[in-house]
Image (cartoon, rainbow over all chains, first blue to last red):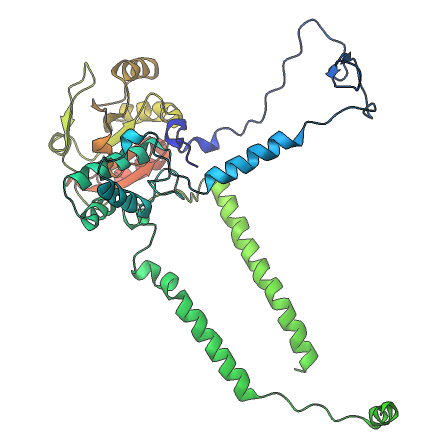
Length: 212
Length: 184
């Protein structure tokens, strides 16, 4: 789901190659060695186990998996129908017009987080486009005109359903090409025919006779 | 070729395809690392066209400007969208100052930024701009087809947009282009 990368500097990705900074030494000049570990040991109420090394003592518990699992499932449940309207106030009061605006937004790519539609993205630019689309819908613009308005500024790249043009001939033609290639190869193999099996050698004949 | 040899060859075919694919992917990743290939890069619709009509208020003390003023000013020129909250914008500021020192005209547009923040930014990093205008709601930026900051547009002697540079600009990248479009 969309993170507003604009704010972070969309192109800033190549700066942070420095790696992690060394951790500050703990105050008070603690002697080297592993940090004291607070572990839940059965019966004891979590006293610090100073300097645990290597093998874990019996009863040492691992981080509980269940909350993580539940959180993961919740994320999955929500992610399925992700729409990024931040508040109901973004929506148009008229449900018919709102449906139209949504339909338009779902067809348009968010140019910031490029694999999401304007309707799904949390980027501030996408939010702005949602507002613009809704205003245009209220102003009575047709779907076609609103989409053309976007394409005029951002190119056909914003169409999540690419148009049929020289750039996309191969893309749209792929099913036809695949079927045609399959047909041709079937035709070629059929014509060539299956080679006649090599006749059995006398030993093989004998072996067969024995089996029978 | 006998049947067995042919079958062996056919068995190797998918492996060869996968191998070729991995060479291509390796190359793409390598180019992404060096920055010579960026899958997010967008083609600008403005290239080959005139600037969209706009008239923006100024960032005090600078006066604002419009597309006609850019076209009437010294050309070729650069129009640079920036914001105080954007990290690559900080990165490119030294380069812009360098370009200014060489006499390149740069029109600045502060994108979705607060007056005070922009002022502080220009105070701290220097002001390489001919004039600085404010696009507070980002509507002009949308008419430019902007999809991030910083972005720089090169306008040639006829007022035609020749190039859109997305990301932190470098003098080394833009000077040859400026010369190509008649800058001396």
